[in-house]
View (cartoon, chains in turn red, yellow):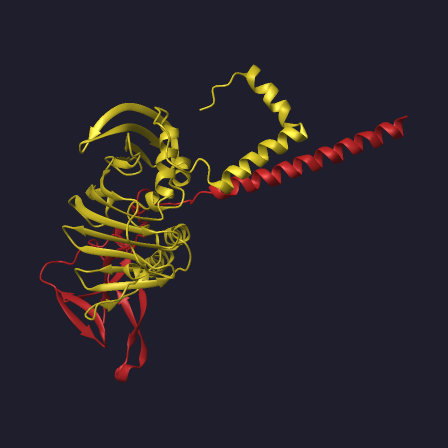
Amino acid sequence: MKPTITRYRLTISACERSKALMRATILGAVLLPSVSVAMGQVYGVARKTTVVSGPNGTAAVSKTAVVGGPNGTAAVKKTTVVSGGGMPNGYIAVLPGGYRAVTVSGVRYYSVGGIYYRPQIYQGRTVYVAVRL
Amino acid sequence: MHKYSQAERRPVHRRWSHPLFFSFVVSSLLLGLTCGCGTGKPTAATNDPDQLLQQMSEKLAHATKLSFKVDRKLDAALVEGLNIPEKAQIEISVSRPGKFLARSDSQDNVRHFVFDGQNLSVYDETMELYATVPVPGTIDEVVTKIDEKYGFTPPLAEFILSDPYGALSPRIKSQAYKGKETVGGVECHHLSLGGEVADSELWIGVTDLLPRKLVATFKDREGGPRLQADFSDWNLAATLDDKFFAFVAPQDAESVEMVTEAQMKETAAKVAARQR
């Protein structure tokens, strides 16, 4: 009798597994269209920026920019970002008053108080990174 | 909210194991999805916040071409580098599944977010700068990709996704119905939605089930700064052709780089390490 019971149990078990698999598949198909979009932003408000601290509590960032060379050729020019207490995230969101636009090698910068700023789009807004040309 | 007692649940659970009954239920569900049942006109409003949120979501999701306006106020703490609140009038146009345009006009600048199904462009009209990145896909896909890589989403993106409920509900940890109130001359249901990052108050029109006002208080920042959005000018059958969503950079505008979250972190870390 034992082998019979075992076979019976195995048969039931396989049947149940099959049913469960079928249910899972169909329910999965039913639920698939409602898979949601996972967003880190809440209502379009940008996440808090991580500040990387340098010495004396200042923050800094460096970039290598590709700029236009003579006759429209591309040239790689390294620009070092100037950082300080006024730029806790390595950039400023608003240019200081009295800035003027300057074009260097076909690239637009803004100059104010002897500092050059390169505009970039970060987190959907224009920000300005101070650079040494 | 299910209010069935245990005694009521058990027989139903047992019936699920019956193959015929199970097949019937599944077939009905699939048929319902195929026919778009439950996607038509919203039924009479209830005072169940979750149900109201779902009805609002369905109403928005089934408009293939829509436009609306938002008056948005952001406390200074919600915008990097800003020390006064930002007030912006935002116009949003959507063509499902893969196009949108949002124009934000604030006291500081005018910005455009344009997605044509292939590229996302952010254009700063005030400074005459723009950045374009390739992100082919649907609105849902671009919102996810941009969020992950560049750390932002278009303003109030939750309301233009294919399933706003799916985007909003996972964040909701508690909810309450606060009664009916009039917002901008429209009678609304007032919902209170508690979340981990922000607690929100949402007002949904009683008759049209459209969002009318949103106030979110951000708990992850000092002082609990707030976002307020007043929705208006809803058009769920807008006339929008593909040209409307094509971004053509103005002649005087200059292309700049769109910096990723990773780039900003990496470079900042390198220089900080160099200075140590």
